[in-house]
Image (cartoon, rainbow, N blue to C red; front, side, top):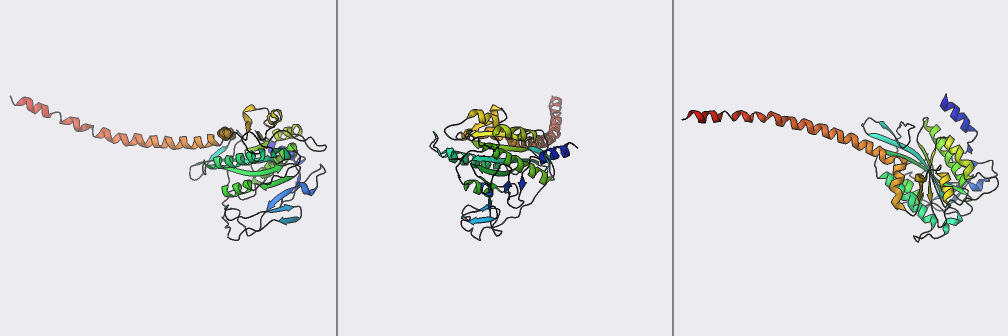
Length: 340
């Protein structure tokens, strides 16, 4: 009932996808040059080793521009897909698996500003683009450090005047693969079409939820200087945000670059100041992880383990009470009294 209604409402908003390439056809007079996708030969592994992969191919519509080949020694690892239940209470969802461990899952779409303004150097000596790149890489590594109990699926969009899709939800979701793609993102430059990037992330998340067949926690993390271009015919941040909120998608904003428009970042973060961060300040990564809800999931798992240990300790202490009959040897004092 409710879900069908929700799906029907979203149908009008969804753009047409090419199933193989995630190329977009928009009503906003975009040509195919604005939609890029990173593609690899079939012989390549979806799991990459930094030392093995030499280059990438960029697909533009029907044409593939080859920028080099990947060594054939790249190995493919088989991925085992497991179904994960989710709830709608916010943060990661948890469910008991056969191994009695708690599984947390969330889909995150990273919208990364690749416009020309991110070329400028920030006070920490890095460009805004480099700060963004370092930030998402460290974020992925931090979440991965929680282990197998936390399952985060990623997609990534870089946006300027053009849009590229370094990571898709349908890609093999291993950490080496995700990190490889993030390290090799292209800084394309151009204008800052943030609203359009948010819409694309929204659509990717909705499609992924439908592909799985059940509701899942959805999050858009936008990294930008917040100075978006208001181009005629393109969707603004103010127009994009209500559609994201209606789809039940949470959003967070990460500011990058020397000149940051905090008002726009706040708008992206649904007017929640606690959901606005700065890319140069990686010390706040811990707060982001908390906000996503990953740490809460891990905490839940740890508590369960501790309780089990406590119960075992109580059982071991009971045998010591059986040794208390040693106090029955006290009648030997009565024998001493009979001697006089």
